[in-house]
Amino acid sequence: MPRRFTYKHLLFLVLLLLAACASLASVMRASAQSATPEPGEASERLLQGAQLYAENCAVCHGAEGQGRVGATLAKDWPSIRPDLTVRTIIANGVQGSPMPAWSQANGGPLTESEIEALVEYILSWQTGGAPRYTPAATATLRPPFTPPPNVEGDPNRGATLFDQNCAVCHGANGEGRIGATLAKAWPSIRPDLSVKATISNGVKGSPMPAWSQANGGPLTEQEINDLTAFILVLGETQPVEQVLPPTGEVPRAAENSPLRGWAGVALFLALIAVILFAAYWFQRRDNKP
Image 1 (tube, one colour):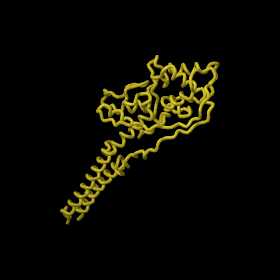
Image 2 (cartoon, rainbow, N blue to C red):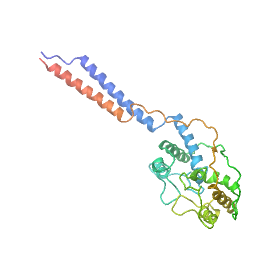
Image 3 (cartoon, rainbow, N blue to C red):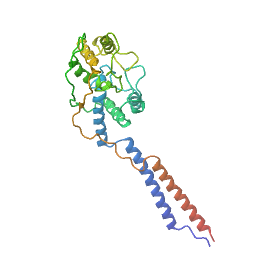
Image 4 (tube, rainbow, N blue to C red):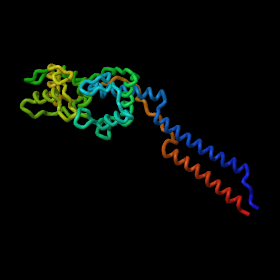
């Protein structure tokens, strides 16, 4: 005589179903937490973005995003997903403009998590929630320079200007970063004129903007002369060490939940399969004579 489907069987299936639902809820919660950081994590990411902006972007876009030799960033971004727009621009740059690609995938220095922090910081200007970050002074240890012959500028003043305006792209020693290498010989009859013209006018269609006030930049004629003198002696000097102020540990991203993504989906599907198999097994067993 076939055995009946009892309450014990029903209870067992209900428990399996509840386990599957709990698994699905964990997956959804883990995904939501990865997409929307906790308040403390969001605050850390904003502060990281502020620091990255001060170290990499403020020289061109201004300390408050007001624009300098780069575009104004402290504005509303008319887009359904402004985060995607800003992220794409930072990662890939804008071809034919002074905006280079910053992602490591495109030859730049920034990781994906650093770009995410920058995006969050830049967009926080829309809501007035951007934290103020004043970078501590960095000391670049350089010996005194002897001005090159027949050049108007002072390379010692030019070294300070270089650290403030050029090192972020060209490296502290002119070794190149996202900008060209400057620590080299300049094969020209008047290399000072070539370097000065490049600084003053920029290079059209490249990441090198125009820095002279006559072309909308921030530097005076004397400052450009000083920069020119420094760049010309840069290839003749030994690399120097840039002494950074002590900083705390860069905030790390929160650990991913083991139930996040495909692992959680696989677990949920496995539990559903167990429920179906259990129901089939009970049905087969109850139908046996």
